[in-house]
Length: 237
Length: 336
Image 1 (tube, rainbow over the protein chains, first blue to last red):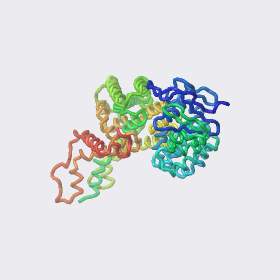
Image 2: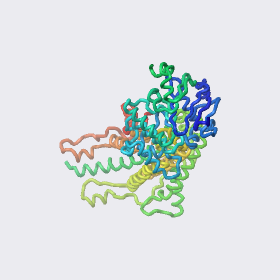
Image 3: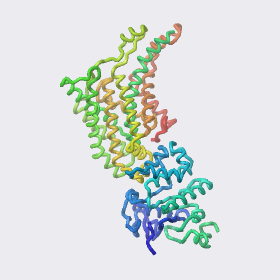
Image 4: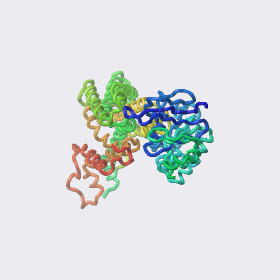
């Protein structure tokens, strides 16, 4: 089997000098696919994603992007390498307009990014409508769209989402998932952490169930949904 | 009752001086608010930065005057301003590299920065006194009035006179230009937007590839320009005395906080709120009231709430009230 496009391979590590939170944990995403990390609270889902993005020390194991070892790169350098990251909180510039948020997303680009902005507006039509509004005035679901749009402005080769549906209503959540599928259809692999395990696994090509910083179950979304063990422990039967 | 003369007296003694003073405070407060927004600390050295910038302008003005250079009706200091800004920018960037960068690297909490800026303040304070001395310096030249009392009376035939000093007009015009350029820069240019983004959300700005050291550098350059312009205008309008700039720190900070720290629009509004409060509370209203009220109501006292010696108390009181009831300021800046 060939190597996945982005892989955090057997990662062990934690924040600063603190104890290890991840133990030999592997998450990966293939080209054109959606990979989802799920698990109970405190399982290290977000930590695993942050490890892949270089926001904590990976003491053992490696992170590879398109075959290249990027374990020692800073998050900023990973952005330059083509990784887009949407943090869970504070993921927009609240005092700036929607359009300025997108412009800032494209800050590292020196070429004309108006076409990318057009694509983002096409994916998220509501943003076009609200382009001159301050992002901080938007609803939760719209803010998440701004956040994803901002990350898309660099034309990332892979997009990482940390709980994109945290704190939005179920209806908005469904819409956001639809949008995420649309982004994936444009060919960008997506690695995301989700609290809403069932819905997330339904759209996932690959799912990782983490428990206490370790891989507990791994499989395609459908496999995991069908797995009686997974159903019993995480999906409420 | 004589509404017209009341209005003229009011303009002459309250409105015009307050607008000029408010513009100076607004420029000072903009510098404080930018440092707070981008570098996230209260820069106590700002008053003495203004003194340093003004000092360079004073020295250069003297030099130009000794060469016989003049701008006709306008003060020669305007010619010295750009060089003053460059020298001050050099000082601020050097201070940042030598002092503040160390604490930035160590991710020191804001209170450490504040104390460090206090140290920087004392050094700048000493530097200015060492170079130019603690005394009062005059460097204004050119035409003194745009409109003088006598001209105004002759023009209108009113009993009350109205004077607009060249420095007052110059202050307001310069402030408007500087503020317009600043807002254009912050809202329309890539670098300006990256400064706002960095101020808004530092982590996300880093994720977007914005270089924090560059943002910090540009901020100091702008702060140098604002401080020098504010300091020079204040010195032209009143006179240049190092200690006065140290005292100015209070109304300048009050302006920035009243408007909302980190919010440029707030800094300007705050500047005028503080200036108008100071002037109206310490002005003897008798003259205006004699015109404005019916004859029988003529006040016997001076109708002055506080003597001018207490003008700094006004900033303090407003500061306390705002911090108690609306800590984020009028324009919702960041809470302290």
